[in-house]
Image (cartoon, rainbow, N blue to C red; front, side, top):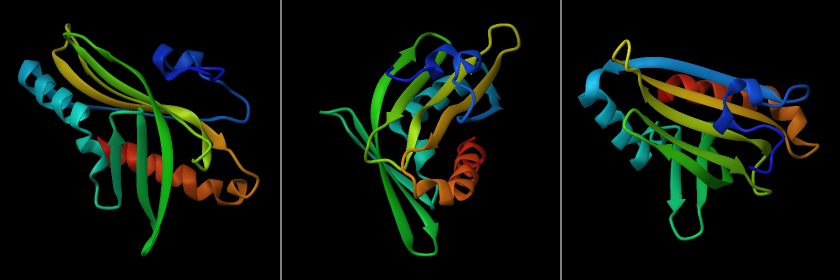
Length: 155
């Protein structure tokens, strides 16, 4: 990743200062079947289909375009670059970093983890961001609320 921190390494590696860190983890089930369903949903991008949010993933150039409804019928489109995810017997994740066609600078990771000790399957959203453009600072409180809304609704 080209950022000072990386969601791949976890919260302790994320940048501080003028960066906002958003993290939410929720137990979504137990056992292998729950993990398999969640991992498949993560790979398909089901977490983006929330009514107020949708996404398009271009497989050829690694661009993830996210469209979100902000106010009534006004939609905001942001482009992200898909970064390397993780795939294992008990872990699936996808990460993306924002591009210049995004109102924020930062990175986000979605992860499904099957804990071997507790048998719990957890879905986690972890991101760090800050406004990319001067005008984005004015709307940043609304943007932070949208990030928190996504973390809540996606879990």
